[in-house]
Image (cartoon, rainbow, N blue to C red; front, side, top):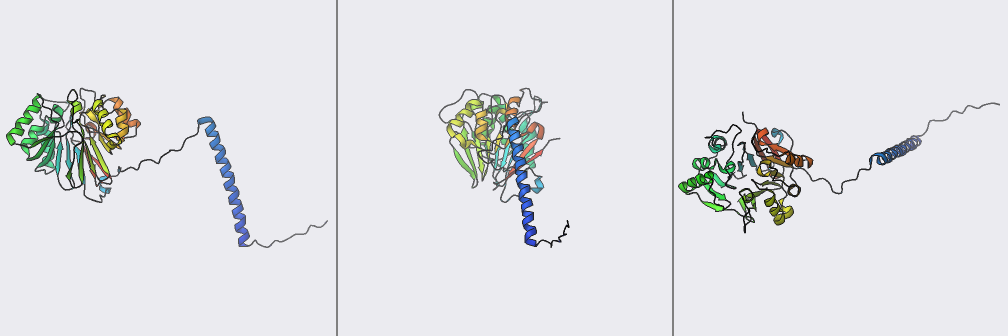
Length: 339
């Protein structure tokens, strides 16, 4: 028997393409079978993952060095001043308006003659070349919020000063009002539902205290403010606690949503309820708190809530002065630890 050798001519380009396509399709088919088998195996032993029902909320927070942040418009700057155990927030609007919310605080090494206004807030403002404060807000009468206010009021010309309307017999409150009277500073009361523009692009919405009743105690009657600049918003909650938070939620619902939340009452266990935190849904939480304070602030449970919600946490006791700069679209956070 003769075996005939057959010399086959080279395949045409079209035949080569078809062959490659068959091989590719075959490979894809077997890859699909392998992937599907692996998925079924995982589901059987570990449970199947469900796809999210909604796409994640787009982030406006920039985790980049400050020299890489390129604002597309005029900037708003908000600084949480490291005053120790207390609050003081300085705001400069895109058109140059200046606002100070509170001026209190004590360091862990507090001395009897320590004045947070004279020793921290005034030097900070002078370093910023501030000549006048257009608006000053004293959220409530606690010393860790207004203890340094007399020094500030003496040092700078004041456009208007806002309070919550509750008269107090605390010495810090009485001293502040002596300076107000001496300098004939114009004062007004802020209540829930008030809203106004600081300049043409920066809006303040007042969420607390209620306009028709008062809570017991100072904290829940503190002024809470939502600031809006373009697509970026801040919620400053002073010392409000669960009662005031609940009232705000009942009144405003999901309108409380804000990118940056100043945690209430220095991170106390009596503030930042789960419902309130869920409604605000912030990207960043700022806690104004003193190192080695005697109150256990911030509470570990509050920190756990923030971590569980994947919220970026900043603390003045660890990070120093916190400045958030925004063009109304995105924002960046800068920290400056005092020596």
